[in-house]
Length: 223
Image 1 (cartoon, rainbow, N blue to C red):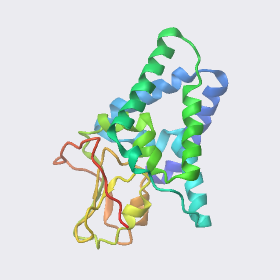
Image 2 (cartoon, rainbow, N blue to C red):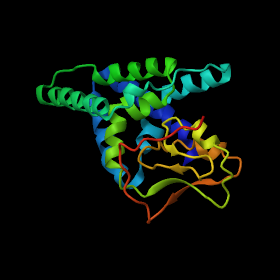
Image 3 (tube, helix red, strand yellow):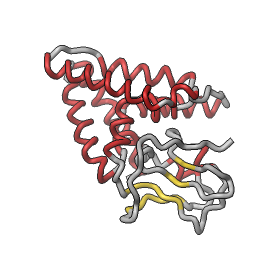
């Protein structure tokens, strides 16, 4: 399905825009909540295929790569778990208020533009892994997910390209003499690592032996 990803992203972006125009954002939240529960068996496909924020962020990211523009890395103080959880709690409280009262607050639209602004100045992992409340929820619900991208150690040459192209810091590579590992509950299922791998060592699989992953796992990025 990866070859149709861009088409799916474009379609869902159009649907999102139409729902914003019609003031029917509760319908989009239904799409998200359905994806949230499905993430326990299918991973964070919402991020890679459906999320309108990520769709537009990828355009910014690709443009920055073409121009050779270097953006700031995630500040260490923003990697604090309390900040991530606090953002999630505030988001849930606001969304609960919206559903309970029926008031039309532009919460999703604000998140949309906030994600784009952050990506202009910072590497996308700041938003995907540390700021996005959707991402935090999906990481939690997909903690037991067994499907996702995996690295074949028989083919891997430890070049670190997968670490560099990952938008969410989902590839764990603590030491360069070790094999990198993709953390499925942090992976956006975008498939960029698979395309970039010179050894074709990365593929989407269903590993029944996968272990539970912690949403607070910290991924080390290669220098």
